[in-house]
Length: 137
Image (tube, rainbow, N blue to C red; front, side, top):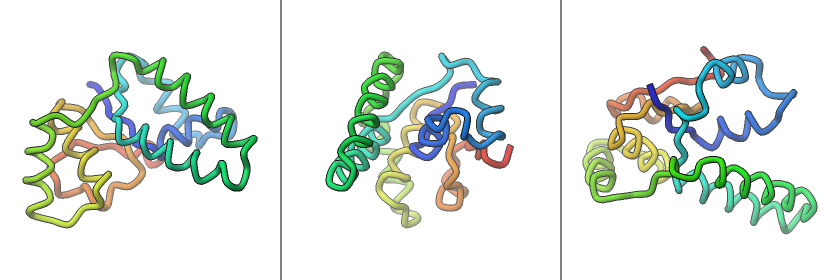
């Protein structure tokens, strides 16, 4: 089984020793090669860094360094929005209202037959996407 990681899961793992124990246990039990990243998640992290740069530039630079290493680590396993994903997203959002990023992430997982790993399961429950919440595993 392969997994598409949401921003909230990556942010939790980034905490290292302060990471939620359930999330850490799930993460450690899974092969890193089974994890995929979306360009949407990369964009969400860039947005957070940009906002942080205004209030705490030193911390923002640490996050930039983390993001650079994350992008390198996921080289070849970072997924964009292609025509199949766009079609699935269009069909999903014609039936329900979803935040743009959540809808695109669910569509990406469906298009690539991945399990979506997120803490925010409420909005995606009826989309047909397989998902797990590692905070509750």
